[in-house]
Length: 477
Image (tube, rainbow, N blue to C red):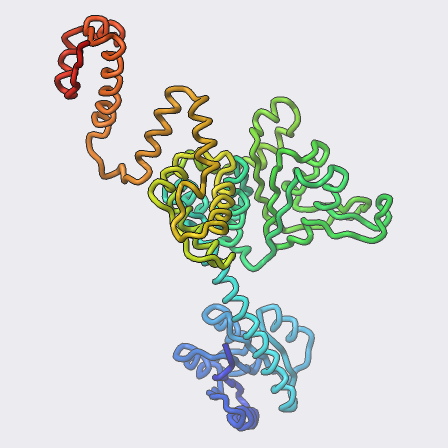
């Protein structure tokens, strides 16, 4: 963004002539108005990059024109000129949003300096707007957060509602489900975009240091405090503070956090002064806070303060339909960040990945794909590239219940299907399970249909009908 067009409004012809001559010579397009009404007409018809307005004019004053700019073109810098160098005029002009204020008579160097300063400010604003746009696009809901499954659609809906507000949010989810990513998405889709986003893991910092990290400390507050330290609440001023693993926060610190949420102020360790803070809190935990409240390890009043609008992040095993999308996303990321060749998975490899339970959730899936993409010499990743998963899965199957075995087999079978387009799935699966079951029982009973019917818990006529319907060949010894 650069300054190209300038509006000059002054009822003194000499001022208009001098400014028009000087600014036109520098290549600026200049429009002139000799009174407030002319200026209003020009503002309605044109867009200006800078305005230089006399504070007192017939028709409309410079302050009235300033208000119009603030309403319709708030990004346009407005310079107010006055022949009366009074504090009242200066304060009023700056209070209403003037970019600068100069008194007559002035020299042209002053105008040049103001234009140069405004030019730099507009460039900085443009860079900030671009950065905000890039960040918002990067953390656009449903984009960096990959997933189209019903559980994730519910998460997106809640994010869309909470992000524009300042409401306190708590995110529940197992380790590796992407709680910090959700917190960042909330911040970067909120009015606090452009302000700090700071994250602090309450479980990763020793108890004796956590208070100082959060609230800061004064010099001499404790042994080793050789200088003042600014804590995360002050560092995140105007932005968002993400408190991960909030369930591990020491009980004595929970009351201080509650005070911040209630009073919007902190006191540094070793200090006596209350410091106002403007910070949005987003918390996260993989624990059941209700249980911790019941066993008196988490404050009930803090729980209700945090639990205003909870977000439940589903584990990866509860949204297996998203795994192929995540695989594609992480392989593309590996290609860009690790500079490896393009990779894709075979159908059997994808079935293996989709059938795995992923106790480490999305983080485990990403690490697994990064390792495979880095180590595999082939563009197509096969089951061999995930051999330890297959071994682990076989071990789980060997130790698992019949229900789990069937469930894992169904997941693998459905991995490459769009079940939404299937009809009569229940009957199809039921027949496929009935056929081997009846065949095995008939083998065990040496085709004795009376005994087989007793074992299966059905009458003989029903068994005979199923043998015929399912096309089972009965072999008698």
